[in-house]
Length: 271
Length: 289
Ligand SMILES: Nc1ncnc2c1ncn2[C@@H]1O[C@H](COP(=O)(O)OP(=O)(O)OP(=O)(O)O)[C@@H](O)[C@H]1O
Ligand SMILES: [Mg+2]
Image 1 (cartoon, rainbow over the protein chains, first blue to last red):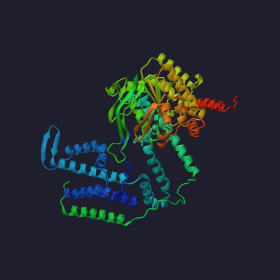
Image 2 (tube, rainbow over the protein chains, first blue to last red):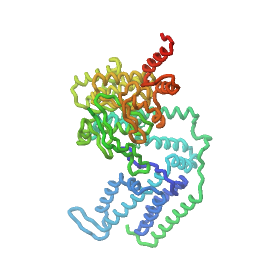
Image 3 (tube, each protein chain N blue to C red):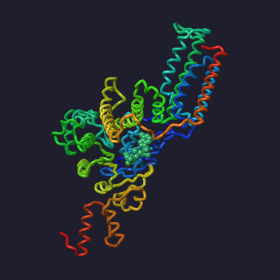
């Protein structure tokens, strides 16, 4: 079912990672991207992976969920890995057949990059799994608010994102319902050629658009009825405060990053 | 004869996820040919989940659904045929309309069945007549209709497939009293004419009392009661404990009975209430005109 999609979904749990300030989590995610790309040797990569495992453990999320986040992009990872195996030369020649040549360098690069991508995806899905969409956009708005001096409509942007994120599950549910209703009338989405399949989407897309527009109008009216008028002078119900755990997590992450840089200097790169 | 039957049906939403939810728990029931069964129950009790199993929109986690004694999932490729034989009208079915005319929208199901144009035409006319859509409406866009007319268009779209079993999930939700009466009346007339077995999910006890032969009460993903309507409403205390009610007139007469004023037997609809009240007043020597 469509509702099985978990990308960008929030899974509430009482863990340390869930309790961190969303602004800090955003910063930590940026730091994490650096941590994934800094290592140039196996020990560094191993340290990064260990750090990720620690974070997963601290998130209290089931392992199956973590795997689910990488499953959709697994084909992509395989594809890039295979390309790397054949394209990167260097190191010993392991075997060659027709135009295909496999070097040890290719294998190492493929493994290295594959692990990097997996780490990247898992790390960023930890952010969305442990942070509610509203908290996330709220944090984004705060972090971007200095850009207001450049006349960027930060609040409006964040509000648009909040609304979009808020309605993704609703639209998925709606699609599911409409699909069921049309299937009950014998609609067939699974068989036939490309043209037939595209045509089969019409009975879903039209009701979906109609309902999306209806929802948009209703929401706009409801917001106006409550005198919403943008970010000017707007106060917040939930105030964000940085706690000790936030500073601590930042310190640990910076330390790991520093260690990775030191390791790069001391150990020969494999790539 | 039992048309549709479930055997130890179980279903769980999002198994293995943090918000895993068992929506059906060991359901074994049978629906008799030509009967109208009302399915009632608190919100979230699993009514919609149950009916979506009956035409193969959801696949049981365990257990079977039998249509005329045959497992509907015996050949998964055949499931589309099952859906033509067990017609299903969803909650708020007007949200599924998409064609540019009412006529074409009603014809969507029959066309998917691969019928001839004449046959489709005839079925569309017949179904439209059943739900009281006039010929002039048939050429209009379904998006220009009123809420009640849209609802009836969607119901006609399923009736036009001439299913053996017709399932309706809260067909009267959000309609005014007149629109509600109209739709219920049309459903009742349709099934009497065609001998169709009907399942009707409903929250309105008044509706249920008026047209249902049998009542199925769901609670916490299980079947709590399944019996003829009078016998289910006789267990008013239990129903109220589940957060369900009995029809208002039933409550009045059972309280009159408690006070020793009337002996209540089977007062579920307004008509019965009227008769009983007139009889009671006559008994007390009041002339009623
Ligand atoms: N797609 C879904 N994913 C997860 N859980 C679901 C889904 N659909 C329904 N549920 C859950 O299953 C339970 C039964 O739902 P169902 O829709 O069958 O209830 P219902 O009896 O029809 O209620 P209502 O009277 O409100 O329509 C509910 O607790 C609901 O939260
Ligand atoms: Mg329901």
